[in-house]
Length: 541
Ligand SMILES: [Zn+2]
Image 1 (tube, protein in one colour):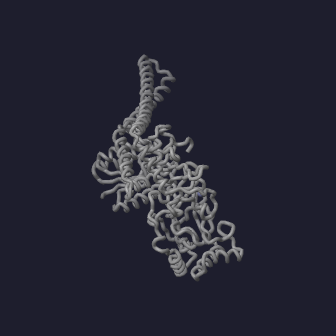
Image 2: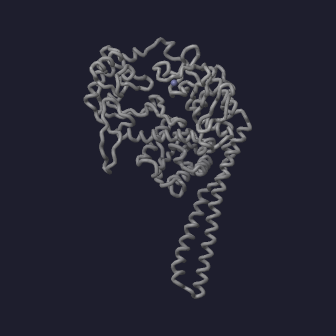
Image 3: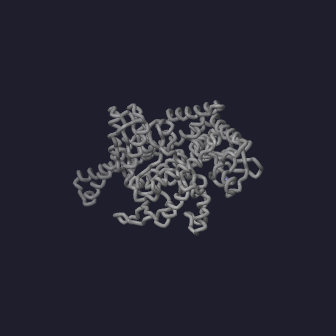
């Protein structure tokens, strides 16, 4: 597999390490696909509008046409261009050359992505989150600690060479480091987290978050690697990307999700070491024994929406309570949330899957969505055509004025006014010619619609086919749905056992576009209401 990487630095919104970050991400992605080295094409563009301002992109397309590589990897589609029509043009050329386009954030790019990009707010939000992660990746590489401050360390306030505050520098706080060592030592010696917390409280030692120490801030959560006893940072490592923050577009609240260890980024930072290896290992060995549970309890078979179902009141998880019922975890375990309503997992599955299926299967809705897409394209086409007409009209007027000047000069009339005006006009004419040529070059009117629509329809057909097959084997639907649904919120109604269900992610974005109302509006939730099945999304979601 011969590969090329394309990266673009845009001065108006990225910090200056951007290209390196992009290339590093693309290389990692390439390695995960089994690829080796790749030719790198990078542009430093002020704006992504014209291919002319991005020589490497043009060179990449030429090399693609000459068969120099089989795949192109970019961080995201909008690295190729921020303009949907240009993305479509580039995609078309690559496809024609038999070159596959893969992005880190979208995966293998197909007509579906090309067609829907730019109309889907939910996808945009997800992209944005990934970009913020990428920015933080750059910082960890430079030995800085991203995100929040861990107990045991101080933030170092420094300015860089240009006088800008340096972010992410840390140094050991000796007093807190002593407490960290005490906790590890006591745990390794056999004390429980509860006993350790009690001892710290008795000694009047303040906890990291103010208030009293408790067992969970010491013990933490194994999957999230939160808590003092799980913090590898104390061994002198900076670990980034353990969790990712996902912003809820409806409430603006940030929610964290654990990432699998293979996505972690680890850098050595020996100056930040607080705990020695032998103590660390003794603690981890004890924790492993404490976590070991009888086999049947350890792992319940994950259901199709595992980890996605959230309490609409507090944002906490809705997890199994026994008897096939789900309840708010925070209500059950800490009493922080007052939502005591429970619902059968089966009911949630039926209503969500049923709702999706109902909308997907309505052919008139597919037609409606395609119509909306076509209308948007027609609008863009009209706009581009309008621009071109304006330029042509102005060019005619300028040319006529030049002709008049020339006639006057030929008639022996060379005034100062003409001497001054003629060069101005010639300059404007040249600029208009360049603008018109740019419009032609960039070919903003690529016909793309038929393929995009077909690909979109196929994805929806795959999904509905998979949904119909729901039974003992839900794996195919599971895969498609988990890829396109970020979160399912359960909002209890006043009547006992009744819930409004809201779906978030890119799938609801598509369902909303298909739903007809406010087709291209920035909505990312779809509402599935008790008994009535699926309702049009509520305004303002
Ligand atoms: Zn709750």
